[in-house]
Length: 103
Image (cartoon, rainbow, N blue to C red; front, side, top):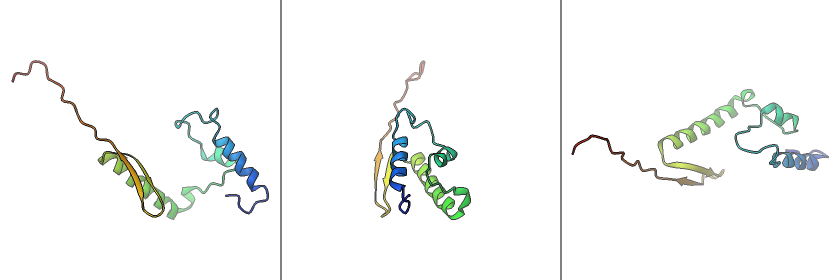
């Protein structure tokens, strides 16, 4: 991200420390907004400004969401070579007896 910048190593270290600070980022439920990321020095490319990138990212997002909705997959990690590791759990519904049913 800062490869050709004279103070790139310091910038990267500062950003890594900020991102790794548990007092600032206590949980996954606290997203980092684009304005905050830019203010902290991250180089951001807005999806809205690059239609090809936006289409590619949204295609992966939608495929992932559909996979989670229609399979037992709960976690997936894939690399750039098309290889991946997938975690699945099988959820088995337990029948609930109905009161007053005969039989």
